[in-house]
Every structure is written in structure tokens, then in C-alpha cells.
Length: 142
Image 1 (cartoon, helix red, strand yellow):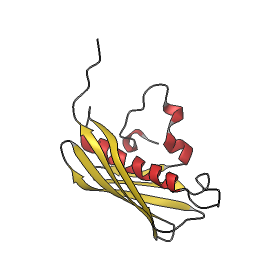
Image 2: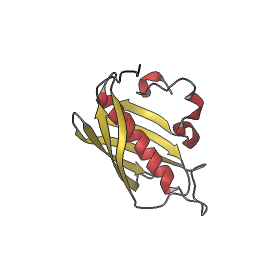
Image 3: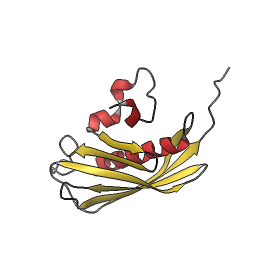
């Protein structure tokens, strides 16, 4: 992933431990107010062969968190506070696409709707993520 599509600086030593890599998430577009990504069903299944709801949740939180990091701005931070997901239909193959759009972007919190669709553009999951926003740079102890 290119730096312009990754709004968070990964801490040294953790570059190979990113969940987005393990889930196969690809960020397609990342700009203020809109983050779009894709994720394969392969590798993210329940035992019965369909997309795991937890993978949907991780996908939604990734996209919404990136949007919140962009909103927080340089030196700011964002951390998830609340995530809810409604799974509308199962997906058994292919790629899903997620689109995170802002519902509210304030000084101390931001909320995003993340709509996940299958390759036939059918809504498979709707998620809502609220993040705490901090624009202060934390001082190191000592």
C-alpha cells in the first residue's frame, strides 16, 4: 500500500503484523470523508464456508478508522469506541467492497457508516463506527 493511501504511520517493528495484510484488505481510495477498500472472502470464512462476521467487523473498523485518522489530522489520533454491524446476507466467494462515509466529524469524536457490498453490488453488511479523536500530540513520560 502506498503512503498516500495509508494515513497512519506504522510503529517500527509492527509493519509485518498488520491485520489488513492478514485479511487481504486493499485500500482503493482514502481521502477526507471517504475511504474505500476491498477484501476477499477467501481466507476470511466461517467453518460453514461463508464470510466470517468478525472479518466484516474488522474490515469496517479498518475503513472507518482510516477516515477518523484523516479527520484527526497531522499529529492527531483516533481510536474506536463503538462498532455495530448488521449482516444482511451471506457471501460465499469473491471480493467484498466497503465504503466508509462520515455521519459526524467533530472535535472529539467522529462516526462513520460503512456499507459492505458483494460483487453484484448487493449490500451484505452495514456497520457504524464511532471513534474518539485527539488532536493533541502526546508528551512522552520523563
